[in-house]
Structures are given as C-alpha cells and as structure tokens.
Image 1 (spheres, rainbow, N blue to C red):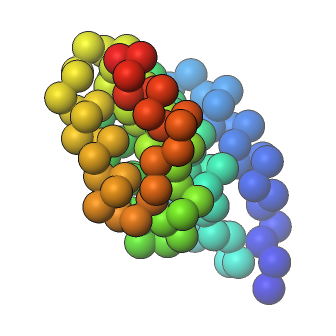
Image 2: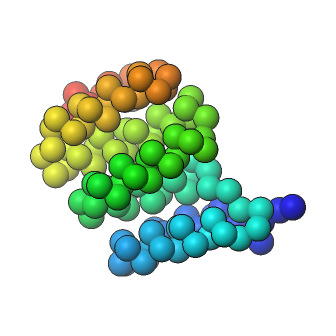
Length: 120
C-alpha cells in the first residue's frame, strides 16, 4: 500500500519548521502513516536540520536509525552533511569520526567526501 504522505511534503515540513524538536516530532510521527518509509532524502533533511542547530546527540540517534533502514551505498550525502555540521560548530574530532564511520559502514567516500573533511 502506498503512503498518503509524499516524501516531498515531509522534506518541506522539516525544512520549514523553525522549531527543530517539532520538526523531529513530525519526522517521527509520519513513520506511523501506513505505507510511509523514510528514505535518504527525508533522513538527510532531518540530519541537516539537527546538525545546523547543534543537536548532535539527536542527530547521531537519527543516523543510527537510518543505518538500519537505508542501503549504506546511498548514504554518502548524509555523512557529508553531518561532517559539515560538526565542522561549522568547530567539533573537528567529531567530523573526523563521522568521516571514518563511512568506511566502517561500507559507504565508500568519494572526492566530495574527502573535500568536505579537508575543508574543515
């Protein structure tokens, strides 16, 4: 059965919700909709929002859930977003840790990923 909630609507609500925790509540509640399954786009959007606002512990929790649902090969953009989020807050070691986790989870870093970590 198809979900009644399109991915683009979830992404739009997460992006435009000013309150990060309310965006997370919506992100989690839409999962209960029959047939809805988060994908790389919805996860990336939520992780970017959490990282931008410095909610790193919650961001790591969302990333852990994502790893159980998404093919590792598709997750490079999400990891790059997390690396950049840590970098913006001057959390250099955390950026390196996320970058190194890519390889651990069989997500081969590309030139873009290497550029992201080098820019930090």
